[in-house]
Length: 368
Ligand SMILES: *Cc1c(COP(=O)(O)O)cnc(C)c1O
Image 1 (tube, rainbow, N blue to C red):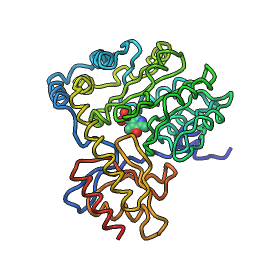
Image 2 (image 1 turned 120 degrees about the horizontal axis):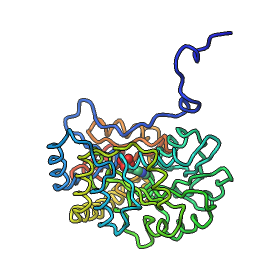
Image 3 (image 1 turned 90 degrees about the vertical axis):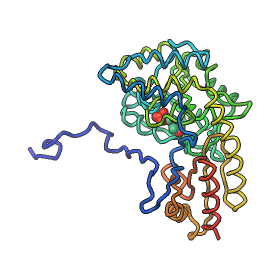
Image 4 (image 1 turned 45 degrees about the horizontal axis):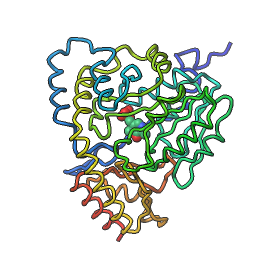
């Protein structure tokens, strides 16, 4: 018998080494004194003061295990959003919940669908579960219900829809989400990833509460990483039918949220004034940046989130890669999105006033 590498050391299960590891947004610009991190859609307003206080208070009892049910946090979410706490499950970031849903519902041979420029994390978790990722094309950088439905086969078990989507910032109206759901077989789980829901100011948008409440095959995931400014603490939640909560509960880590996250998250979601402030801030600067960048001749995908997808000219000297190097040298860190199918675009998070004005000035210089 010949000895192969397989016999000499442990090997990952099939598929794992086919997964391309997630590349997070950069956070430093070597040699630059002042850095504006505009690469991961974090809020320029920071966390609520109440959340920071709750975080510090949690430090007094670090020897005690956290509440494995995150009761205090679920109660706060339930109150603020008018939901039944029994239909909530919290995760170490919504990323964890997306992964748990894949582990719960996908087996090798199964398929899960997401859209062409959809959030990359879906593909990672689908493959980690041994299932097959299926990509539905988009139209004008927007999810297309007919294309998603056309991608569904008898093997499909999950459809992921980021609404609004990252990195495009586009959304589909609730009527379209409803039409998507209506076209899916009852055994397919529709996962509505509403990470940016709080930022959306459109009458025809809904995050998905009503669909989850009405059907057995819809889940909505949310996060504390974006508008609540708690990305460092890793807190997400999902609103789901009881049978989904029950199934996912069986495989999650028993203490998947830490005590500081539970306390700070509860305080953050109750601080409605802070959320309102963040929405108002975004309402000012999202249109301002969209106009300013468009005026520079850059195409900007219309966004309802706290970030913009900025497309660069065909001119090789003015490419997204060149712009990235130029901006990084001046302390403005944006996100490359080639992995999302946009080799000549950068994603820009709405930052502080100083960052926003600065990045426009720097881009204006770059394009001269
Ligand atoms: C940022 C983001 C999340 C949130 O991830 P967390 O794990 O909660 O930090 C989820 N979905 C999308 C589309 C996002 O952009």
